[in-house]
Length: 290
Length: 297
Image (cartoon, rainbow over all chains, first blue to last red; front, top):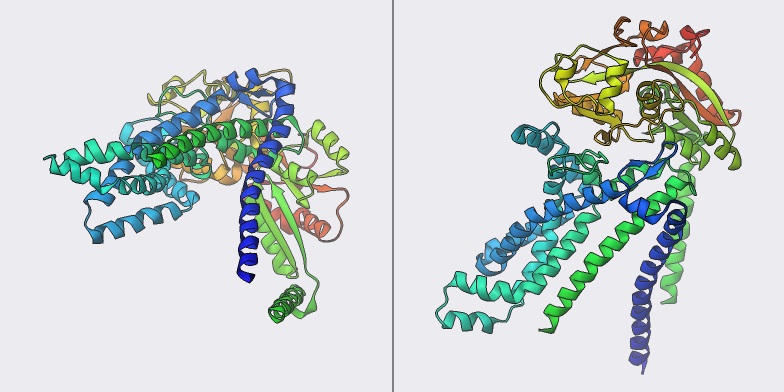
């Protein structure tokens, strides 16, 4: 009897926690909408998203976030191009090829990578990577989207490796046994069977990695140069949406137009991350149903 | 079960009492702390003041943080600081906004500063006119060879828009003092989070050019001499030239309080304006306000 009551209570607590998580997200979205929408009414959403100049403190102020969106996208895409192949390969190695001892060490190192604070990564990047990029690629400044991408790839890697590894490990043994029994080599089995079967999980891993990367602020602010221009190449400085909010939040007076504009950026960012996570969930769900 | 809760409550009470007792401080003396926030240009100067002030008046705590003049004003209006540091005058619209939030900014001029244009040591350029600077920062001149340097692309370093230095530079170099002008920094300019960040980039990058307060001048980077136009003489930003008004981009530095200062805030500002405080202004490479009295800015 007593046990039943305790069970019921715990069930209720878990239910409330679950509901609270949803409520928080809805509240955050509602708050962003409330502050951001007022700005769109004053300024115009098209002018906001398609505007090419970001001069928030001039009069008349210009709030065009196209360069910021492009900056965020460029840095994110760059990070993915670097992190995805390396991450997936690492996951494949850890789960399928590495001997037991190596596997454990690698896994804990990758997990440790996730624990490095981004400001530390940014700081190390600023001191070591930025001068290196400038001299190596002979560009005017090392504070570029490329430097940001490399640092962000570091941060996305643990997510991509851990979740891909899970997906690869959960491919049933019978698939591999079948392939090997038919005379496929180990590499053929890995490439044609394991990787293919794990693909939805890997895509989900990549999407979650992107989610982490697009919202990253500190390291990006330190090493991408913060120039609100539409980038011509990955070797040019960019300014991301997150860095803009972080850099300018302190100077705005509550309720002012600049303050609202930053919420507008927050709203756009929220929508983008929501879409990315939504797509990741679609793929993750697909892999579970198999 | 019930006993446990009682013990827990007792424990919390004990913790609260203990922490109260601690904040009473040494010898029961009354502790008071003030927060100072704002301009990165003078953050080092105010830091030195705060340290010396606390040496003499050891019962006080002073917190000094940078972030830019705009940040200082916003903090003063949001009532999260006692003194705002600024490298520009408060704007009219800011005063109006402050009044609406029941804050009455009171201004104290504490010194003068010349805006130093820094380039890398390996850059052969020695001098620029205001017009050339303007064209560079608006990306009309994009290569150092156009102003007598090597064939290198120019990397423009600017401060964030919350910086008083940024605003001053925009008004007096980019817009050349013309209030109606809408000229802006080129979107290509890198917005650096602090004066130190500008200095660091100039230190290691031969392409770079940036502006900072005089306090950041040293021998590891090159400071450019500036002329109003090609006909006038090029002036180096040092104490004498700023004091005499020869250096074309110099400006006053301020502390702002909410209303007439009282208590520690008053003591601190008095200290800043005292002979000793003004000596520190000179030590940190700014220009004391006393010697510049009578000169109009």
